[in-house]
Length: 385
Image 1 (tube, rainbow, N blue to C red):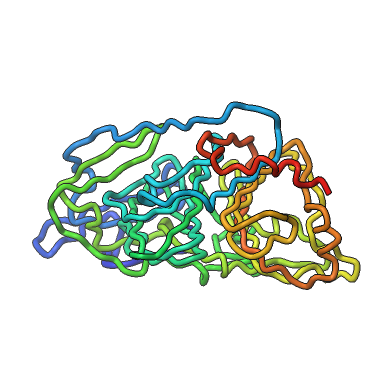
Image 2: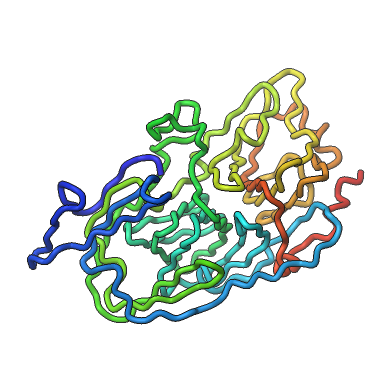
């Protein structure tokens, strides 16, 4: 993250004695990235976070990929995905490479355990639904349109609101997901030309300190396996914390689109960057205002990247046959662009009401076998007039 925040009670100086009411010490924990040279936070626990009672392997991560065939554009209709499970167990991985795993989920139950992705950060886009992201940093309520950005090392679970339909797009990184460097000054502050700012970022706003005993499960995903750790003390026993690393929400409606007299390329929509990929937000915006402008995007070849777009709402100006929760995958090596009639038909239009999330990767993606159940097999031929 890019700015300092604190919640709860902390000592005046870091790494100094901080006493509990009974005279014992609170237990300080540093969570940071890039080997003590990146952003970090200090948390203060009632009990040492290292006291594990039992460790066992819960699952191995074994993704089955489709057999490689001809290179072509793909369309997945994920609106037909069946809801079930929780926000982790209910995930359906669709496209994957060594940098990122993109999944969808429709959780129908709360998580009974806490979870940590140890090999990188993740972003959960809330297409539909509301509820609570609970972590050792406190309570963060989420709503439709939120990006939930969860750094590696954070213990969390999602508790959906009851009787509210949930639909999520999940982006798991191998590495860290951050605001684009070009949006920040050398102090980490958002610049004036950035499409969002610190005011748009919602950190946890309520710290609930648990001092309970029992059996509490934490699952950690790392190195292609999920390991369960059982604790005697409740893992959310933090009385205070401060720093720059914490989970936060950013709502896509707070992304201010950058427009121009002629069509703006995808980097104008960039929201986050990570090793090997970027995340962009397409939001309602005014179209180009040059008198001869063509608002629809021109045909283009993704020479160095695969393009994934998740369609959340509205009418996408360059596509036919797209519905909510559709995902298109346009691989590098072959051109794509507006469907027939959409290019000419965009002339004279003043605005678009589309809402979509795009992930551009810089290494080729592979479809999973699970993705094939959602595929529109005619999509590759949809440019024929």
